[in-house]
Length: 352
Image 1: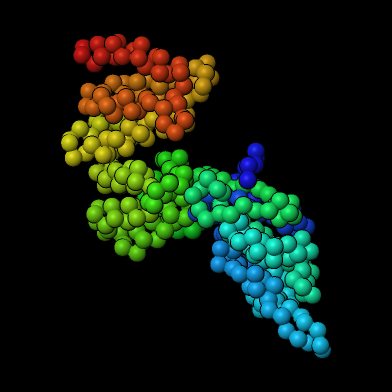
Image 2 (image 1 turned 120 degrees about the vertical axis):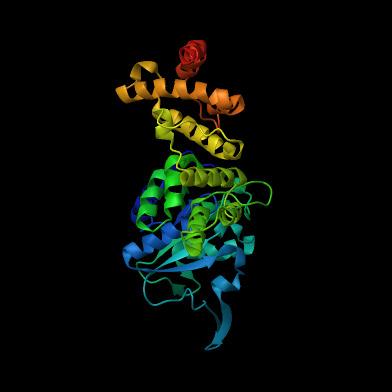
């Protein structure tokens, strides 16, 4: 499915509360970004029970039921999980992982809210969801007839909204503070190989695991938990962040020259993390045009130039990384030009 417009968590709730009440909605999105949780929240907001069916585990008879003879006629008896007396939200998860025969069984349920002679109670709502083909998840082509029976929307992960949710749901401070400083690490593209990758769900799992170990969790145990939950790159960076926190290094103090960069060989991962954090802060706060700099941004520019020069004395490789494009995100051209232009002057000033 190729949709040109995507929605975040709050926008999806708006779609469900408006479109979902009158037409079936299909939610597309990568694994682990919260599709199921949002549907559950939607049902709770309406005061309805949410009944979930997992498409990848269904056979046609799980939908249409089995035939029985009644008064000389055959009659299909829908399963108890679907045939209810009160209105509810029917959530068809992994709908695009169904076989073609199961998809056919859904036609009348989605279009007419009917299975044989049984109709869903008035006020019931049907919502479908599935992963995208590019996510390396189990998917099958959906027939055009089924696609055309539903309203389609694609969900993306929003770090800002996830942090709002995390603040209300006891997410561990290590996780909350890390995503606050590196929001771009909330989600990573599912890998082609079989390895963990970062999603809102995996960060939540990591938070629960850290809480289970307690506040005195060792660095080695943190390493095991991060490696089992996150993409390898994010796991390494998260461990470096923990070491930074425990060693009390702070980027704002380094920028203001209250602290030096960590320079010991055993602190190299902390140095790498702080340099990446500096780069992320510059990408976030510096405008694309120099003329739009605020007073605070001008101070940040001066501090960053000096700190990158000091960083280059410790590790030229990490200093280069701090100004190199990553994941399509680049520092403003004017800053890079000024930085390389001012390097000799900065070096002379430090040697005075």
